[in-house]
Length: 256
Image (cartoon, rainbow, N blue to C red):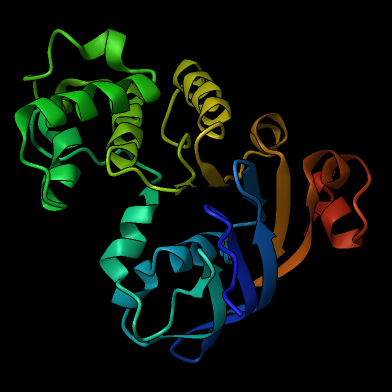
């Protein structure tokens, strides 16, 4: 029987991860729905970033990191030996905590990924750059200065540029690790508006310490503690009627 693919859906099955002797993730079982925004909340060091780094195999580069269990994406375990890691990272893009534009022009930041994957036609690249910047709500601010250095942009603009760079290679999933923590309130608001728009075309998973942000932008929320997924559900349910005492304590500020 051929397994049906759910484009953009990620599911973990008994996922465990160790950094040396430290068990950083323990028996995580969760399914991230297509074209939805899922927020992962919890105290620092609870495994949120470690979890999403599993989804595009970024933990592969960490010495003494060991993963057990399965992560099913497009109907296949991404940790199978025959999986192309480069292809996984194209389909599952990532935006980091601090904006990290390349020291190149705005145009070249967006065109870089498509070029790496074989696109050379200038007209096609122009279209990708324009489409990606529009999708990241940045085109109107930079369309007359595409040859300028990306480093000349403000912090909020740089973060939207990084989102556009992720979009340029046509991923199915966009991972965001604390994408607003280095931004001011106005830039944060723009990123949050953008996240709500992105779910029309992408599955979005966001790690955030800001519970108000999680409540504003996400459809689903997962609460993590000490490497375990304590509770997962619709955001409204998690914040208004949590089932687990630990979740309630964290949300109401009585944690610790």
